[in-house]
Each structure stands twice: as structure tokens, then as C-alpha cells.
Image 1 (cartoon, helix red, strand yellow):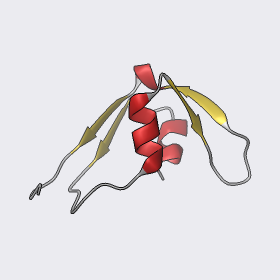
Image 2 (tube, rainbow, N blue to C red):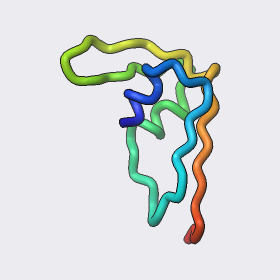
Image 3 (spheres, one colour):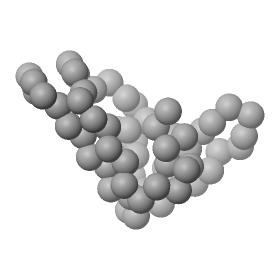
Length: 63
């Protein structure tokens, strides 16, 4: 999951080979806010500093 990738401590997250439209409210929130509340099952929310993480998306056939 996107939150799981954030909580792993990675400074760079690549969402590779996306198809169709991206419909991830969590990603939209992460990209537009300074901090993000990452949620994973059986754990409390963890505040992530979104300004310190790079997110890259790739696609072969962007529409």
C-alpha cells in the first residue's frame, strides 16, 4: 500500500507502469499537504513529512 511504502522509511517511491486514471485519494492528499497521516491496519496513525519524500509515477500509455 502507499502508506506502507511511506512507513518503510523510503525517501523515494516509484509507482511504475500505471494504466488508466490514478484514483488514489491518499496520494492526492500526500502531494498537496505538508504532512500526511499514514494509516496501516492494527497501528495508530503516523505523521509523515511529505516534503522529504519524492514520488514518481510512470506510464507507458498516458491518456
